[in-house]
Length: 306
Ligand SMILES: [Zn+2]
Image (cartoon, rainbow, N blue to C red; front, side, top):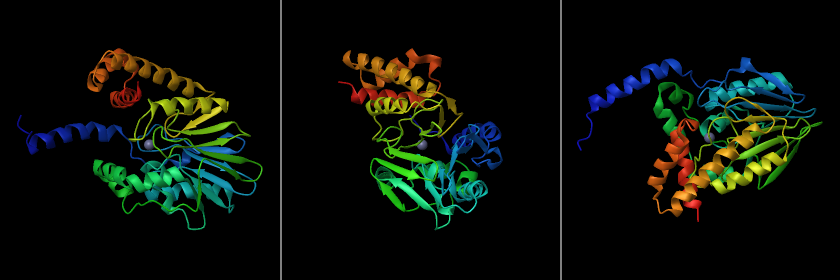
């Protein structure tokens, strides 16, 4: 087959970019959306804008914690400015739910005096993948390129292995490294006094994304059990709307259980991974609108089935 001409590709890119560019807002954190969701926790909702995270603030008597930075330094600066409005001149700690660009690459805009806390798994993710994903995002359009210009990872001031308890004064934040679910560096933040869980990409409304070669469906199922055991009243995922109770957790469990059962059955019947993706995707139909994410889950399940 002949490769499509450059002209055809350009026309296709324009056809795709036109309506998409009009519909998709730029990944700018809308700080005016800041709202309080519990006695100690505020968030800036992402309004489900792609490449934008839900940003969290936990305000203690002595210090405050910021969760996720937005895409690039400009967003990071706005997120930091909002922290100062909320918490005055209290010391600021920063943590990210994982090291993907829209969660982490605003950290360099925070002043040198703040303390960035990372799990050792996040440090490893940065060492292994670096700015690969940032380069992919920057190539998508001019706005992303501008936001990510000169963006780089900030070095951690504090590192931890499994858990880190941060006493902010009158409120504690418990940071837990969850292993490889969405990424190897997935970190959740649990505010016990408010029963608020920042779940990262581990429990959301949108379908789960197996975004790392280390991603494991088996581990993801175990992670969901750990999240449920916390009995959260509110889940703030890293993208999309917040959820009351454990609906996001049970939703992911139901979906991943079906992926695993269907995939295992096809593997036992001797189907290849590509055949299994086709068959299981058809079985899900409209229930799984994100076909790429579904395929990622099926491929992971196929590799892990025995
Ligand atoms: Zn991510």
